[in-house]
Length: 136
Image 1 (cartoon, rainbow, N blue to C red):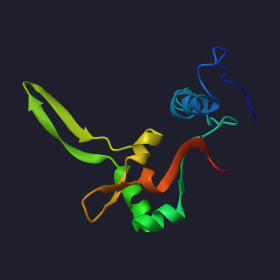
Image 2 (image 1 turned 180 degrees about the vertical axis):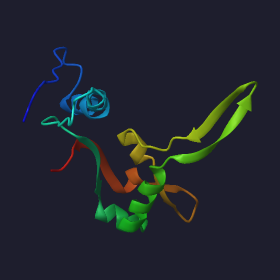
Image 3 (image 1 turned 90 degrees about the vertical axis):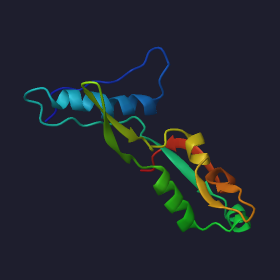
Image 4 (image 1 turned 45 degrees about the vertical axis):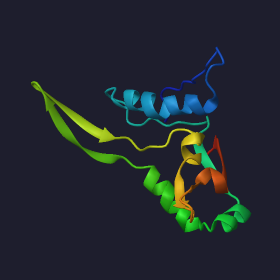
């Protein structure tokens, strides 16, 4: 059964429900699970945020872009890149490229293909992107 319940409340109004849910999922859950005797931490409520891409079929046809091309481009853009290590003095530093997309503008800038005259067709050219609640 339930032993302890709590609610995250932002009395300042500086955080929306999605940000509070992220705080719960990515910080508090791990901290609470590390407490001896805690078997499970379950989150109820809040809003899980996601970037939503709504494709415009007319713009896609005009640019010659398929859904597969969009999916492949988003997949390529949202990856971590492997790295290497560099030794400087007695210290070793790991170098890697972070490719995770963070904002709607990051998504809009994803290149999908090049036109005949070398211009990039981006996701923002063929889709509407916004951050919203995850579909349930």
